[in-house]
Length: 247
Image: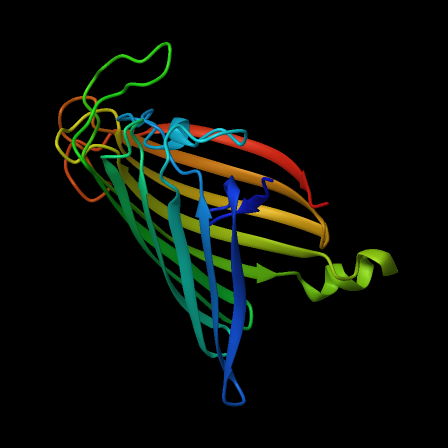
């Protein structure tokens, strides 16, 4: 039998595992989770990274089961530091492996919140193979990405007083995020990307949010990645509006 489990990063995979919590004293704890899952296949590309390599929920492309785990330490209320790891074969012969290491941090004090994550990937040399449209192109052997984000939660008192009783828990969130991703550290290409996101979200109730985001993007298509603090920085601008319901 198969069980669909949610693994690190919010992606769903077929597998099984366990999770739990270890209290340490009156205020500290360690949360842990570990799974054996189908894992990636050979669709690992510069530009989209491993997004297309997520395996089928029905069957694995090899006989190896990937192992993924995460441990998070909460030393005080409002602060969590965590590390994650992944190891699994991606090729049909189960001879070549992907290794992932990730670190993430979340901290909140009153109305101000910070979160960030960095991930490094190592891919054994190999090719896109084992499926009908495989290109036999060599795969990227190293990837890296990170982001840092600051959120400020607020709602003016005068506006709270003017709201209906059912909406007095409404909240605005202003956010600023910077992120970089390099889906092939061996070359500079369009897969090298930076993004600044400024957002203002309104949450009338806990389960529903209106999102407004300004995106400031750049990439390495010219052969060099110009970051916001370097010369030649000419980003593209975008705007995204969305509504999300948690259910």
